[in-house]
Amino acid sequence: MPRMVDRASNIGVQDAVNLGWKLAQVVNRTSPESLLDTYHAERHPVAARVLRTTMAHVALRRPDERTEALRDTIAELLSADEPRRRFAAMMSGLDIHYDLGEGHPLLGRRMPDLDLVTANGPLRVFTLLHDARPVLLNLGEPGGLDITPWADRVQLIDAKYVGTWELPALGAVTAPTAVLIRPDGYVAWVGDRTQPGAPDALTTWFGPPTAVAHSVRASAKPTDSNRRLLLSWREAGAPVGSGQHVTSVSPHAWVRGRCTMRVTLAWVRSVQVAGARPEDLDDAMVEEE
Image (cartoon, rainbow, N blue to C red; front, top):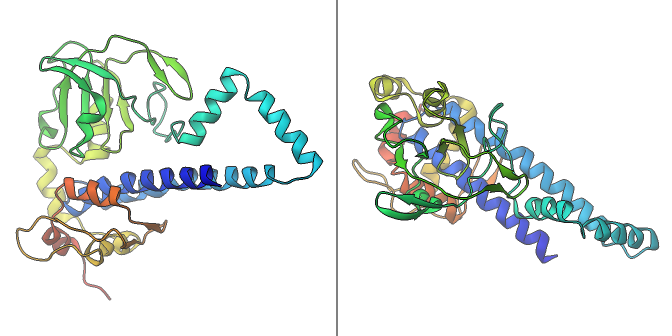
């Protein structure tokens, strides 16, 4: 069953990337530890859906006549463009939608890897995510958005895109004028400078503005519900010592939280790039009972 195995591997990598940047922000005290709760809220439904569809695929492999008739019916349905597109998006994981509220169809979905035009030349969207930093993509008037209180955490890119905005599961959608992209590639906010939601989205996902960030970091303490998840950072082999950045983490360590998952190289990479420091974890942790 190579296709089902490939799909499970793809979902596992997305689990890792979803958690990595959130864990790094909590370790660095950029965000409150409640950010870790969004991992379960977003990824548990995805895993449950994979289990359901895997059971359906296994059932379709039965050799009896009734199952053969069902397979033929499904094959006939998949000969049409719309069902085939939706099925392909489901199998690839590109139809995943996190519930981030009402708004543009892009909200909560994976950002398309568009060919952008910037003042410095052509640029692909996903190259902006290589440093595991969030991106506010301004597709409207250059200089029309100001994120100075978050400039130490979020990249602001002025760009243009000429073409159709098309999502794998939905087809063509209205072109936005601004998009806030999380480090895992999912869209956290869509709008423009006339809409007041950007500061709220920036605070929710990437911590409070600089003016109040220091007080939040000073008072941040993890609760019991996420203590084990933070402890796994230490157990994963992070080097200990003042001023050291994490340079190596065992990909075989276990992350323990509301969902248990194998830490993959994708998770390790996303945490490393985010610059989490082990001494910050030591300061944030309460004493073990």
